[in-house]
Length: 94
Image (cartoon, rainbow, N blue to C red):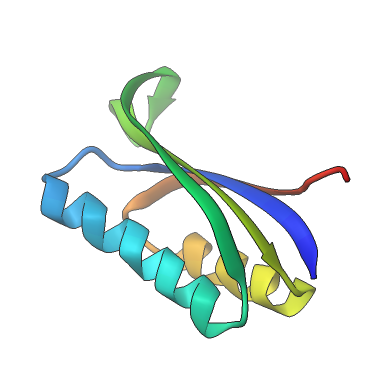
């Protein structure tokens, strides 16, 4: 398994919605054989520029180890999830 890091920005909403989105992605990773090392919730922050006419977003950073197929599935689901404004997955250096 390789080490990865994903940063994603969720549209600002109620805490229950944000918790649901974070739990959805964590469950997706674990169901595909990934091991989540750390989840950092940075909270609501001001964006550098407007995205979908929104000036703020809820930032989440997740460190995990997974096979490339699990990362591909995570990327696919993040692209079609309406609550996710932006996301980036990078392979961590050893």
